[in-house]
Amino acid sequence: MIRTALALALFAVACSPERGAPARDAHARQQRTLHLVAVGDILLGDASQSHLDREGYDYPFRAVAELLARSDVVFGNLEGPITEQTKPLDAGKDYVYRSRPAAAAALHAAHFGLVNLANNHSLDYGDDGLADTIRHLDAAGVRHFGAGSRRAEAIAGEVVELAGIKIGFLGFLEKYGPYGTTYANWFAHVDSPGVAELHEKTMREAIGAMRPQVDVLIVSCHWGKNYAEVTKTQQRYGRLAAELGADLVIGHHPHVAQGIEVHDGVPILSSLGNFTFGSKGRFDALDPLLRRSWIADVTVSEGRVASVDLIPLEVDNHVVHYQPRIAEDVDLAAMSAKLDERFGTPLSISGGRARLEVRGRTVAAR
Image (cartoon, rainbow, N blue to C red; front, side):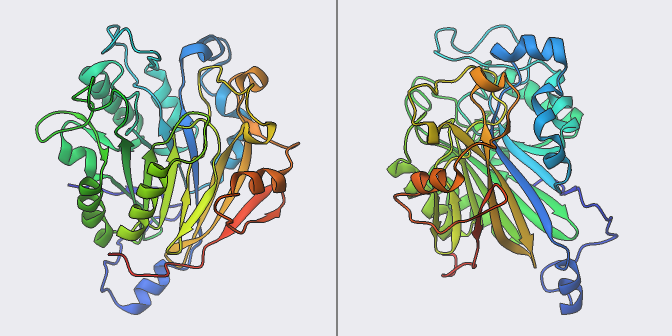
């Protein structure tokens, strides 16, 4: 069951018309333009902990605070549990992450309305760590999707209502490596906790349930390979999400920005890359044009995704010291062209942003 929609509108609405309401009411609720900001991977801890302890938990957000505050809702991928558990699920895992409870309040203070939990670190401290994460986020007023105490909860998603426009969020993790094998219970089952799996059956079920209830549907996918190009799996599932009814597909996990594909009129942002991520990162071997991330400023107008502005972000912690900032010295046209070589997606460059105008769905969702 989808949770009660979060009222984040700047203007309160006494009631929201359902589908089938009088045309004048539907028209009125679509008049306001909304701005949604999407960011990539977030980890408030690990190697950045000393900075957080010394500077405060607002430190990672300071350089982009104005952009976040101007948005109607901000969302991203929370990479790792918020927990004080001390025993990891697997002490031998290459990378084990967690954040202290203060991270939840910091996200709320930075204007995050909700976060995706369907990723390869949410259960680093087991089921208890996931339960702690959900508890801390709930207490801080930060919504979440993509994980839960059982499968039905993990795939249910979250709905946010803004000025009468209902926006749905679903999150999925690609099954790869040890996830689903060595860590057999990483994915949620009928009666056990975990994250939602990126699988055709699951996507059909989740998108099919969410689509009739919302005006705009955003699908968030943790997929691909670290510091690499877009994989065939990303393309396959991104296109499937579009075909099933998503209005926007947003990827994360590779830690760097990737290209943008448009399929059936639906934008697929293959990877936003890191946002504020608490490890150093491995950027040295990359082409300088490929070391940045994206912030996506999504415009919703007349009840649909009208455009996506991609803002380049400096995230190499050897340079920004765990405080990401807008990349001002990047050749944005060259960066966009390099990332989109395989897709050929037309982007207009202006004012430090690469804009994709969204013409709308070209075929009906199946």
